[in-house]
Length: 284
Image (cartoon, rainbow, N blue to C red):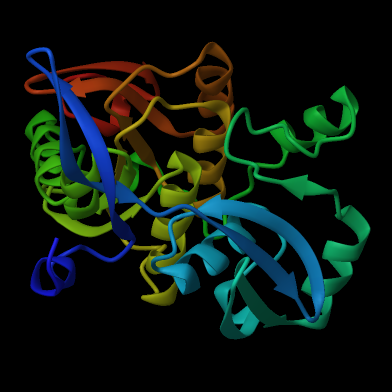
C-alpha cells in the first residue's frame, strides 16, 4: 500500500501485510484492521482502570466511562482531560472534583480490560447486587408522558443510518458502534470502538460534552444488549435502548426495574420489545 492509500485509512485503523487463501492458492494482500491499544484512565494522578479500546474519541470515552461507572455524577465534575501517548499505550489523565475523587478512593476496584461480562473487578456477589441496584441516571429519565411515543419507523431509520455511517467498521469489519437518534430516527451522534461497552461510553461522553443528555431521543447499538449495556444506558438517562441483537434475561430484568424501554433484534421492519412498551406508538 502506497503513502496516498495509507492516508485514506480511517482513524483507528492500520494496514498490515497478510496472506489470503482462495481457490487453492495463497496470495499476498494488504488487510485493514482496527487498532486496539491499552488505555489507562487516571484521576488526579491515581490510575484506576486499563481498558483495551480503539484510540479515537478518547475524551468522549474518558467522560462517558466516568459517568457510567459513577465516578463522577455530573460532566462538570471533570475539570480537565489530557491525553498522553506512550510506546506501550495511552494514558488519559483527568482532573476531577474532590467529591468524585473521594468516591473513587472508597469504591476503587482493580479493573483490567473490562470489556466482557461486565463483572470483571467486582469482588463478590454482594458487590454485584449493589451494582445492579445503582442505576440512578446522570439526569432524570424522561417519563413516557413527557413526549409523544416514538413511531416504529424511527427505530428502523436510526438503525439503518447507524449501519451506513460506521466508517471504521466498513474499513475493518471489526468494530461496534453506538448512536444517538432524534425522536424521528435521525442519527445525531455515532461513536465506534473495538469494544461494544467502549462505544457506548464514548457516546455517553459525546452527549455529555454537548450537553445533550437531557435531550429527547434514543440510543441504538450494533451488539447484543447485555446487563452492562442496559446499566450504562440507565445511568446516562436513556429512555430507550435499541439493539441489533438479543438482550440477556438479566438485562431485561434490569431494564424493567430501571424504567428503560429495551428493544432487541431491530432489523429492517421488525423488532422485539421487552420492557416499557409505552414509549413506542401502537405498543402500549
